[in-house]
Length: 227
Image 1 (cartoon, rainbow, N blue to C red):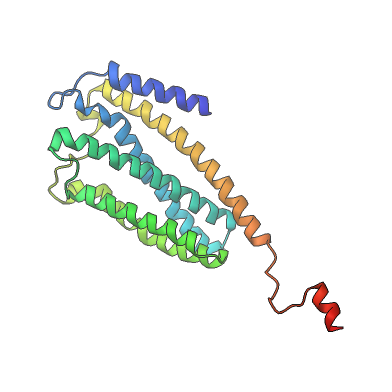
Image 2 (image 1 turned 60 degrees about the vertical axis):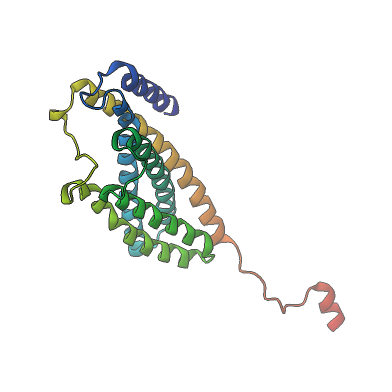
């Protein structure tokens, strides 16, 4: 599966850089969309999974669900940050600046910050049950911003272009974008499975770990002295 993902990624990048035609207005600068757009799609997809897992944990209190919630948040934050950085690089030649307080960019940045807070909460709360419940609540709150990110270009006047459709894009461009999207999906799945297994093993170890002995319990030497 890893080989397939890497092969598709190589093919998609070749198609995006060499095979597809130049864009009428942006020329070759637009070619970054073949990695930027799939990265943002994957981020949104996996954060939907995080939301579902957060709701699922509050309903069923399953450690597997909590582990998948943690894994999906980590992978979503990775892809989202990657996509945002690529968007900033694209913005420099097209907008004249790396960053603009555009509604979509701002909403995406805020959403990523909330997921950073989600991950920070998981690191600082030691009790597994409290950590799972509190982070689930934060994950649900963080998800509220995702529809705003998606619809922002339609709700407000924005520098960011609205979503294109296959009807308005050259078929070769659409095919290259889809190949890169499938490659990104395979790699995302691999990352997600790896992080899920790690998180689940950690969770099971925490739950199985015996409670620490009280500090006032005498050790063997001290017990003999008392006797």
